[in-house]
Image 1 (cartoon, rainbow, N blue to C red):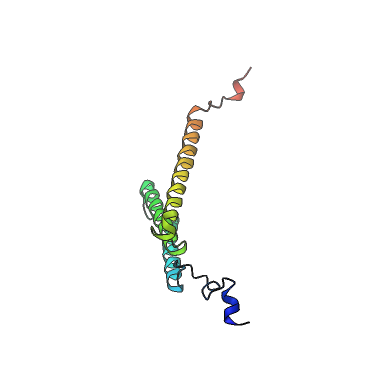
Image 2 (image 1 turned 45 degrees about the horizontal axis):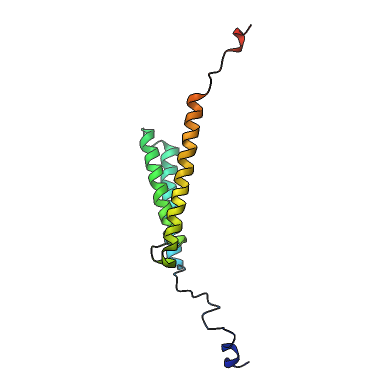
Length: 129
């Protein structure tokens, strides 16, 4: 077939290369994200396994902070999220996801707390008549 025959079918040079204008990452960016993810996983693991910090509240705070940083690393380096991609729809999806996760977590914690507080105490069965 000639080049003119392909032109009528809507085929262009970029259709098979998946060039949709968005950044799909490079080997360097994926390796940067991977190395940061390993570091952000190894530090909390080390803190828990060695008991390096005596205060458990500080350990928990550091683990939560590392988890939040790791979420950002995954979104930037692996999901290629930024405020300009897809006309803002990616950011809107992120905001919606965060809202749903906060509602689910806070609701679960609220239910578990109230179940714990309102449970009847276990009675000693030996004193039963």
